[in-house]
Length: 130
Image 1 (cartoon, helix red, strand yellow):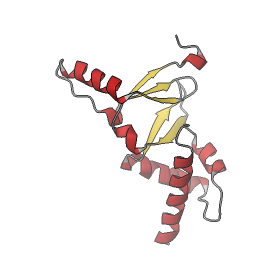
Image 2 (cartoon, one colour; image 1 turned 90 degrees about the horizontal axis):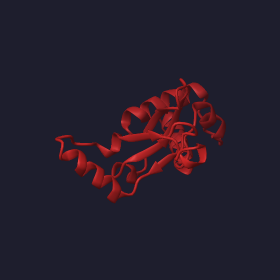
Image 3 (cartoon, helix red, strand yellow; image 1 turned 180 degrees about the horizontal axis):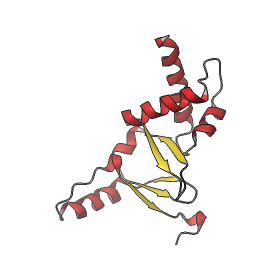
Image 4 (cartoon, helix red, strand yellow; image 1 turned 180 degrees about the vertical axis):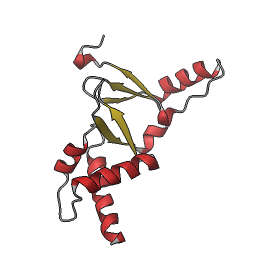
């Protein structure tokens, strides 16, 4: 039984990696999964909770709603800051030099920023941000 869950988790991780550039709801993830070892929606919920706890996946709230969006963390995500559009949910990866500059500016105030856990919220150009 353990191997079955491992295969389901791997299928989920593979799908999330193939769609690393877009945040998705559990329903979108469950619908997008295909193959013989596809986990059911309740299993996707359990696996996603585990992946969030492990730090492999980030969970966000879309705008002011109660709808969660999920997106896999890539290796590069621990090295820089992110910006997320509160309207469409798109995640922007800030350049490492910009992130380092922001971290240095905050450090002069005695605050150490964790880039792996920091996301700046705002509105992208496509959604009307200026």
